Amino acid sequence: MKKNPFDRVEIADGDITRERVAAIVNAAKRTLLGGGGVDGAIHRAAGPELRRFCETLDGCETGDAKITPGFLLPAPFVIHTVGPVYRDGRHGEPEALVSCYRRSLELAAEHGCASIAFPAISTGAYGYPFDEASRIAIRTTIRFLQAHPLPKTVRFVLFGERDAAAFRKVLGNIRSEDAPQSEP
Ligand code: APR
Image 1 (cartoon, rainbow, N blue to C red):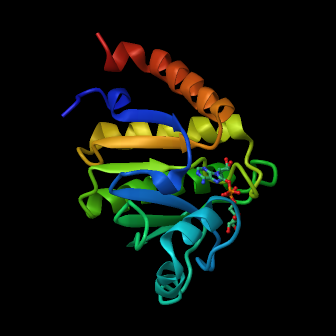
Image 2 (cartoon, helix red, strand yellow; image 1 turned 30 degrees about the horizontal axis):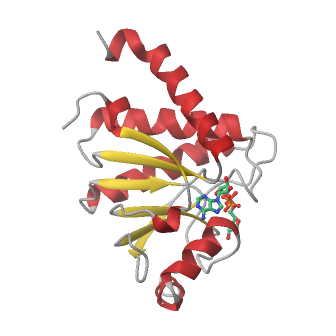
């Protein structure tokens, strides 16, 4: 297995519903009953069985995550997490967003997922500033990977090259900031 956690992170521009990974993460709403954006795309691609399964889950709190089968998706699992609605960054939004990534990674590891794909949680309808959200996503993931062998690979799947380029830039910045500890 690759030692350096930064080597276990991949960034791609594409549609997360097409990802061939063990689990894709959905930026869901608290009811878990589907919506727009990536939530809508995942429910459309997974088929009606996904919503029927979610109806048995009694929703999900902001910052928490729940796992379901992927049904018609290429990915066997969907991890539904509920991101914070951004107000001003002083109402617990950063902590909730950290929790979304950490809880999703914990569930993936508990279910033996070797690979997981994340969208940019909360950066659409929930209005989280993209740059700050990308830093939280990458920092939280690196910290988790430093302490856990699974998932082996974490992919951030962004909707458009501009967003993917922004994530790559943040990954590079964090890697160079951390270089003394993690790389000779
Ligand atoms: N693949 C990858 N990323 C996608 C896709 C897709 N198919 N569709 C949208 N995105 C991106 C958006 O461009 C954005 O960067 O996912 C990110 C998250 O945006 P939203 O889907 O709006 O999610 P979020 O901001 O977390 O808001 C969640 O919106 O759709 C409702 O039910 C959902 O209430 C919930 C809220």
